[in-house]
Length: 512
Ligand code: XMP
Image: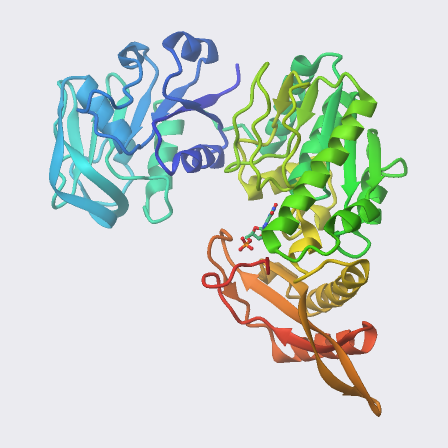
């Protein structure tokens, strides 16, 4: 039986992070809603359970309480924040509104160095985020840590293998959080920690085979990291039962369509059915005369769906749709339901007709860097696995104003030069995203003895960890100069290059 930890989700914001930390302990981990029944938990037979934080108050009867029988299963349980309060409250302790809420890094005094806190320093810093606290611990529990304002920062009942932390060990601000989580996973849960990304790949392949049987599977492949990893995983699992549809909307980077085809097409490395739909002209036509950014996005998304639908119909009787959804774009999906797809999905939204038995999202539990690890494990080339993000609407959001074939060519060529020079300068790994965009501005210049009246290309390079906020990258001036000189010399219709120094906010990463 493979080792596993179950994370029961009570609505906290760090829940997937907890799962990720458990995986960092080399133990397989799944996150399920708190409504999972005791029978379902028994069937999964986890080695330990972690109850997450959440925004509610346990003494409010409308809050999620899970099944009280959970605590009698004999499975080690760790409650975190709301999960800690839930454990205390359910087992007869007292939870109340704290006189002082604690937020942020907080000094925690370990008052009893036993159990999970055995190897933690006498005083440590942990991340707090709570307004309620445990006032009295339940019978059989002892307090093991406290803060200036929180009498029960940690408690445990070793005999029953029940543990609780008011703070969040999973966030990096908790200095010894990993040590504490690891103590739970490897201590009372008894996990040896033999799970690795290759086990994820192997397990997924087995599970997918069982689920799909002899059914037909369709995958929308964009050539991006997530959909590529999902496609290769599926291909390893079900071989030719898989068909990948790659829609070339004419808004890809230079040579990208051919690159994707070279890897996944008939001459490529994978034994799958690959359909490339060259829909460039169809997209250009639909975008003719359109200048408003949202209208352009909608047209691209809509057109994509239509093309994809047409291909799906041609193949016929497809049972499963594969999506490269990763956490945090996890979406609702399920048997017999129509697919509910996020509009910002990286293929611009997929069809919501109901002809699929089920949507398969093999990467839905993984973070981006974990997806990359899985990709390497699957033998996908590094340059593909470490690709920078590329938006679903592609160059459509990097051309201000009307999109024309000519403008696409300009931005493709300028972008290729920029990427080449960033790579040559050895900077590719230190910039999160970088590209050229075509402004709608034309200005006067001089080339040789002639007046020019041409476009200005904008270079954009940002560093960011989550893409929610970003800083403009401070590229070396020599690199900018070289790129500028090459672009104005090599790309027709460009006589000026600008560098975008705007952060996000107030800018966004993309131009539209
Ligand atoms: P913004 O421009 O919103 O971009 O600051 C943040 C990140 O999201 C990417 N992006 C998209 N990705 N579909 C996508 O799959 C889209 O419609 C889309 N719009 C922006 C962008 O490239 C950046 O990494």
